[in-house]
Length: 268
Picture 1 (tube, rainbow, N blue to C red):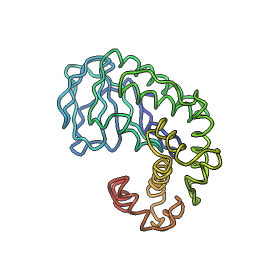
Picture 2: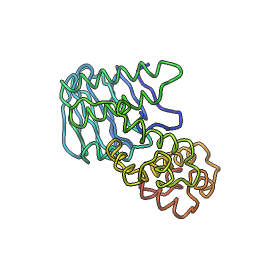
Picture 3: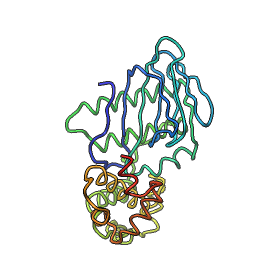
Picture 4: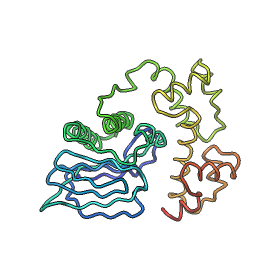
């Protein structure tokens, strides 16, 4: 299975919109870019990538991360070009620009590319297991993002007591009850810490505040409903995703996604 597209609802902080390996890479031109952060790495042969931020030649094991909606195109340099790739999504998708230092393009050398290749292989193997362990996949996805960002190995957040005791229970509460009138104050009270400290922990592990995470998760669920329920009106989608005021939902959606819910539905 050289390529996998995620079709299940997004419930983890980080996951893959698509991931693949051993892909016989064709010429690609995207004047408007791609809607997700995506990473492309040469497996065999060589490729050339043209972006709004410059041109890059990718020999074996070198890769490139491109931010959403950045104009780009790529083509093979010789007779063959096989690639590995991954596009990133998740309920904490809004934190990826912070992880990447708001860089539009990141070049990855061959040494670090070898580590990322191993992570892609591990994730592809995980997709072959049933049931899929979404939390472990999310941790692998986060590790891949960190390795792309700065070339350092990453300790799994799940290994740290502060994450397990305070952040993870709140994430699970958000995933379970996002349609209800949740507040940061109530969620922090359930784990016996202040709202301010809870948000500091969220920023430490996910690069966003508790409220930003909650909002991002709700918008992610709204995206799913807009695409999978084309006859559902905007007011119902707002209520089903925890927004009591449709006007506030539309304004938040526009600020987060860059377009209105109706335009998003038409585009998708």
